[in-house]
Image (cartoon, rainbow, N blue to C red; front, side):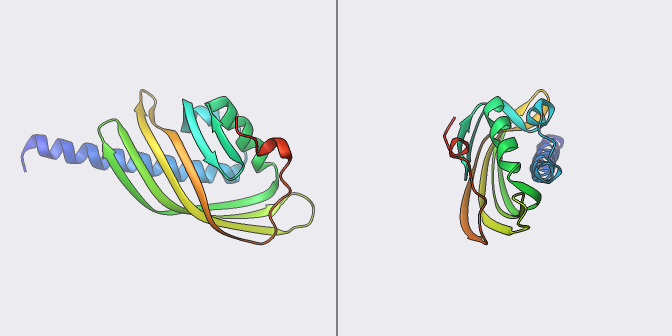
Length: 157
């Protein structure tokens, strides 16, 4: 293998590790519950679009507000992502994986709500590192009683 091919392979492996780390840290951050501007900047581009079970949002500020409000419906959560397939093309990438989420409701009932589905992300390399430019979570199944979602939380923004 020549030097140029080795450099390309090293860049691919480095990008793959950075993207995987970003996606893993993102899911873990949902369980830690600290949603502020620094959180949003650490994971998303300014013009991010996110399709979630509670609606579609455009822009980092709208995403921050929606995620914070949605996660407030739960007392505790555990998000697990796995089986990610990454396609990297220069400064752009896509990721498709599965997500299993366990939620303890915050309504005092201690009810547990499970959801599982497919998570698709479009990522871009920025000066700060890889960031999510678009994401979509499509739920395949649920178990348990879902939380009562306020009407304004489901509206697209």
